[in-house]
Length: 559
Image (spheres, helix red, strand yellow):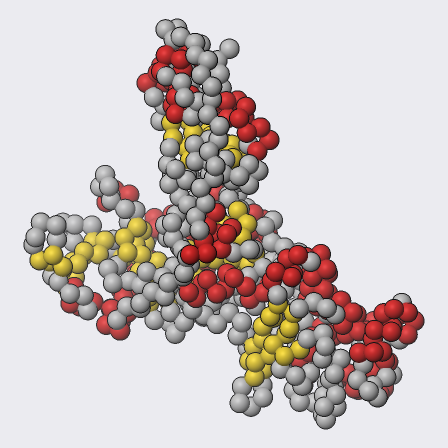
């Protein structure tokens, strides 16, 4: 019986070998990795491509590859490189005539090689010149107009989950060739504010080639074009030509699509390609943000780093089959909320979408209980956001993700609290008109229940009475606010409000001690879920005179 490459691998790492799509993964026998956590090494036992001559001749399927050290090969290569056998001994191990047995001891797995993430500092990439951005904006405007005359490009995008609504929302375009002599156009470098360039042949070039293809932009927070990448036609590519060409002079910062949720409730997916990031952002109606780092070794810039550090979840969905990638170690060491979340099929989200994977369902499965997606039935396009839902600010590189329109303190999953009936600065007592009117008239509904002594245990009642401001009776406290205080008490989290010069609300954020919250996750999630679904609590905090609310001053709403 011939030796199977998967059994060889499992005999070394046992239960640490996990199923992944049509293959298996785990630590690398050559460069290490922690058993049960590392997934840098991949085995595809049924693959028949890329086999060496001997394995192909004897129909011995199976190949392997490590994203960390870059080593790969077939079953014979595994036996020689990893188990230390020579060629004839490897043949004997596989039952191939002409080999000789060997009893050499197999190598022990190497210790993991971990990058020191503490030494990494995010970059702040220089932005292009005003002249470059102005010219890029003209190119993009032309591309946006042309794409509607390109059914092949639209169909290609649709197969990757980028429908017409997404094309409009993310300002995707198409630049056609302007000559039958070459697949693109030449422009003067000076038109983009670029200096002449000396080529490898020593010649000075004053023109720049811009290929035909699908145009994918990145914007600044003020709407200026920062980067243009062009997905080229397959037939235009040479043997070593890249599929994507970045317009020279573009800003090197990654594409950042903000989440519509405030920082501590936001989740982000990290991808390589911009179109994959747009697919995730689009499929979730902008609730889940995305960062496209463009290469498997790409890193966040300063702006993206700040958002990822406060996010509740950072899902790493880099291309799965890219050899030599850093893997997930950098992300896990840098961001406590990082979670390896590869696609169940294919090498990237767009590929998975073409293979029938429900991207929305795949994303939702990675989210914590405090963050849920809007109902598909209530969203346009079966849960896919329309071009009117995602704003220009949503797709800008440095958008202010915590800033929302006045009065719409929208947060978390489930039904958002309706704030349009709130009154700002409602009376010297600081209580909203609706709360005071309800209390004076005696009209109470289950949603506006008031605190009573019999609603709490003796211990809870003691804590509430000790926390109430002097002269404030318990029955003037909404039941939800009282319960929120008991859940919030002792949790290092603060609700911060932002107001303009007129005193109107222009945004908010949550501040919290992430280390404490991770160590006490069950307790924190209980409080987080409660505050997220209580419109009574949100109204109370909206009318609260303090701009920074904690459990210590939550009940002190009197003016």
